[in-house]
Structures are given as structure tokens and as C-alpha cells.
Length: 301
Image (cartoon, rainbow, N blue to C red; front, side, top):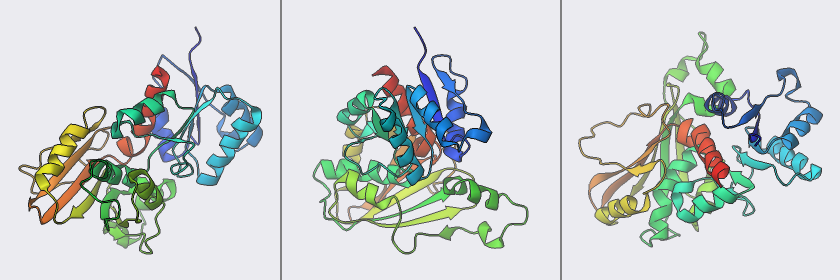
């Protein structure tokens, strides 16, 4: 029996490289590799996209949409896609690649032809908010605020080179707040997947370390013990788990680097002051780790 053929379109980017690292040593698949000088050649890419059983898209949004069209134009309905871009995350024709959200999510991913891989910050926000809305604790029209911090690897190849340059701008040594206009590519995904009536406020921060992130959602006036109970009961499969907040004075963004786990914390001393925190690696559960997790489900499905 032949091994499933896998192609990573956009392998030279940060996420593509990480996916390749995870798959390169596997003996249960055949990894197709395009010559670097032909990686932007449309005809060559079309050939690889349609030769593969499974395709990872690690591309800018419009290029990812074009890649999907190349497969559809060729009529190869057997090619199954995991898209790591933002392009299809709010498209109802695509299955959302977060199996821990429910057994239904996991079952859909296993059988899916088209999976949209979650965004990094969005993964933390959705992990915290989705179960609370689903259980009726958090009203869909509640005005949510989210802030988070990430290592610079999440900003892409050009930013990584900038941060790691010996002649870099001195301000890169400081944490930097961005998306100041309240228009960030993850906000539509946060709203759509959680079923929210309002777009959440979102303030991300990029800091001077390579990878790892913490996403926070503050709440007031909710039952803190019920929130803990919901997380404990909701997350029973996969890589997301409720973690005890006991003994934490600090929570460092980089301590889950190279892990595919996500730890959820509920901080606060009363129902009036609650901080929900999701701690994970933006390149692990926030990107390549999540993509390969979905791929393994699809492979078994």
C-alpha cells in the first residue's frame, strides 16, 4: 500500500519550516519537496498541489486562495488541505482546526477535505471563551476585552530577521503594543468561532524573545468556581488542559516553547476580579503543532 503524499506549499516560511521539521523524519508518509528555485512557479506548484493527498498551505491569504483554486480547477477532490493562513477561518465551508473545542469539531476534522488552522492569539482567546459561551455563563453580547503577549517569531520571517539583526532598532528591546487601530486579522475569527455578537477589543504585544505566548481575558462579576469547573469538564481530549493557578506569582511567555500543549489558568481572588489566561507556544499549539495535530486526525479518519 502506498504512503500518503504530503506537500507543504510555502515551506520556506516560519510555519512551513516548523511543519517540515515535524514531518521530515516520519516513515508513514511521503513528503513531496519542490525545488527552491521553482517554489513560486505556478505550473510547478499546481503539479505538486494535485499530486499530493494532503497539502499544508503556509502562504499569504490571497496566495492561499489561489492555491485552493489550482486544486479545484484540476478537479482533484482527493487532495485534502490544511490552510495555516487567515483566508478560510471564517468560511463555513471549511472546518475549524481546533479538535479540543468539542467531539463534533474533532470528528469533522478527521473527515474533512478542507481544514482552516487557527490563528495563534485566536487559539488562546477561543480556548478561554468558547466553553463559557457554550455553557451559557458568558452572554454572546458581553463586551469582551483581550490582551496578549507573544515572542517575535509570530510576526514572520522579516520581523525575525529584524529582531535578530546586530544593528537593530533599540526600541525592539522593549515590549511593543500593536494593532492600535483595533483592526487585527484574528478578531473576525475570535468573534465567529465563539458566536459573539460583538467584535472583542484586542490589544496584542510583541516582545524581545523568540516564541511562546500568553493570551488574557479579564472578567468581572462571574462565578469563578463555575468557570474552573467548566474548563475542567470541557477539556478532556487533546492538548488543552485546565491548570492550577496556585503558587503562580509570575507567568512567563516562553516557558512552553517547543511544546504543543496549552495550559488554561483562572486567576483572581473573588468573582469581581477574574483573569483568564491561555499559555502556549505560538509556533506549537498556535501554528505548526496545531496543523500537524489536525493532519494526524485526518490521516486516521
